[in-house]
Image (cartoon, rainbow, N blue to C red):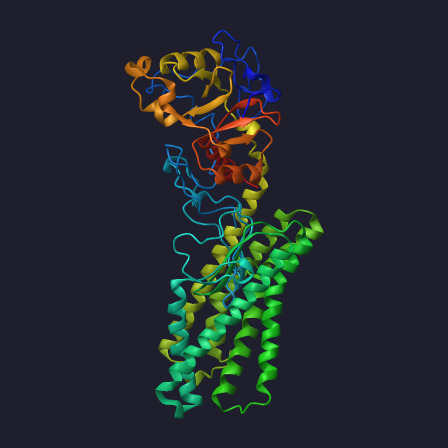
Length: 529
């Protein structure tokens, strides 16, 4: 892209590009800090040290105290040519069958392998919430293909891939065993065939879960929200919706349609039972599917994150207060209270026979199983509520990530310029990045920080900057006006270590380092909402 005016002449502050003229004698101007404030002419400029032993490692970067680094999706590899994007953003899941809803997918720190020294606590985990029939929202858009561990692709209804996770086979075996034991008491004449009937029930139940998730997916598509995938797993299903609903009304509808479809299915199975003999295989299967869908609907309607009912409560509080964060906090704490209630109450209800079993049937193994199931459900709900809070805090701070504020001042140099001379010019100009330009000042490539660090000081006079630069691709040019999720989406689309920041007119503004974005992200997450 041509630089406006053909000279690459910089402007200062937020109004001027952070790149200086290719003429070494040109004055140094440009933004002096990461916050886009007008530079103070009297303030000392932090130079770009010529040696890697100095506080700046001998490359155009800042120290840990003044630079901001953010996890922007997939962390680019050092060579700027590769990166992994797996995520944020960003961000609510819901198992349909055990209740789970995903938090919006804003950038997930775990989405790229960042330097451990600069990762936020818990950055190695995806931010997901559970709700029997889940919604994954807020993540920055990614490919709709599942990453590693997505499971077996079963189809693409409405263009959304449906995966079956390996954990599903474990729960299918568990349902087959448990339901088979119940069939032995109801239909003893089946013998070993009861396990075949139980397996059919497990598959039919998860087909109902899939319908629950498709309800979320269709609503999301209707609201123009990208859906990455649907995954059937141990505790139900998860619809990974990558953006958050724009209004509380849409949030409410998006959460409510899942339990509503489960209630509709329960009603349909009830109607189908009427002409069928109760003591037959079809009668038992229809009764089991009716009850299981009813449980799924009721469980998901409980008013606590990450369940669908929690998202509905969040929407209501959001509507009343006008602040989505307030709704998230309220629904998340209700979810934590719900987790404690499940941990304590579920075993008590089972032992008392309130859930359909008599006390004479309760044995030691049943008691252990009930306690284990309650502990797993409580842990899922508690963790999902906490993740929802973290993701909401992230969304609140995302607007603070602005390309203009995080951009480094840069100096343009010819490709045959020795590295030592380029660093001298950068230090003299108070710049912290190098852009390789042609004779007309048009940018060709960006000098990589990692490459500069790898060149010993005594060799720098003999190494040309062109050998340390990465060629600019269209995706490595980002607008100075980008901020928040739009900025992270742009970086995720083309993983690299540095990006050329340009004005709308095409003029060079400076260089944006993925390390600075990552650090800013971590600092934003560390601040209370």
